[in-house]
Image 1 (cartoon, rainbow, N blue to C red):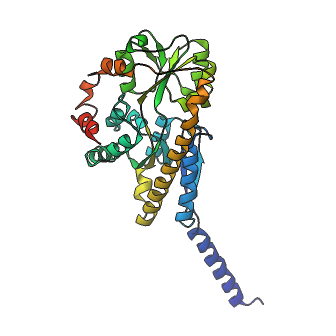
Image 2 (image 1 turned 180 degrees about the horizontal axis):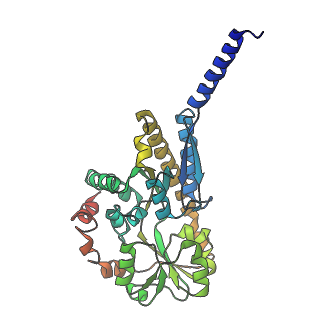
Image 3 (image 1 turned 30 degrees about the horizontal axis):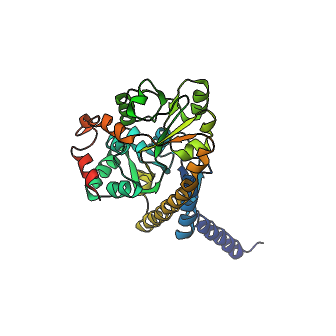
Length: 329
């Protein structure tokens, strides 16, 4: 006859072991972004994974999905809203592409931000906090940390350079899906078109469009120099990579875990910025060996765009916000 005591002890041991296993199971955070694996944004995402998994003592396991594996910005925002994705690391410009985030269209105004430091300081200023809070409430998406430089957007063309504002007239150009960018191009006399980024190279090659607007690092990494002859260093729109999180997921975290995530995003954003600076130090020289780099008359472009976004004031973003940003030192 089998003794009941050892059997009871065995059952208890199995129960305890199972409970320990459940308690120690890491919570999975899926993080998506649109950049390829050679981009500084991906390096920053991997740094976030590394830091958070260490700082949380294994409470989290971060799975990074680069290169639009989970879709473009709009698709990933929707996945966060439906609870099918925990985090996204992407540009603050793209937050304006979903209902409730329209105020962030202001981040795509040409020449509004002097540099990365000015842009980050403005978006983290006290006057911007209510705008972020309202967008979070309306979208169900938490803006965890606005941190991580990106290459300023320039312009490439196939047949002729753009030297002044007049040269935009009739230019068939692929642009970002932003009402502000579309307004800018139409004001300059260009013919903006919406083409998925994955199809851009072929569209340029076949002449569906003659031009596009992306930063030098993207032009170089995606070999757009093979189908474009001129790069105009306008640096006209800036962006900042931003850590977003499903609000439900964020609200379900303990204060300690929120602090760990914040620390990881701060370290990761700084790391990505460092990597971008290293990349940009040589990218223009590299491009000069592949295409003609032009320093256009950006002042003529600024003058042509003056007042182009006045009707957005008080509609898409609070009235007077442009002046507040411009005044930030």
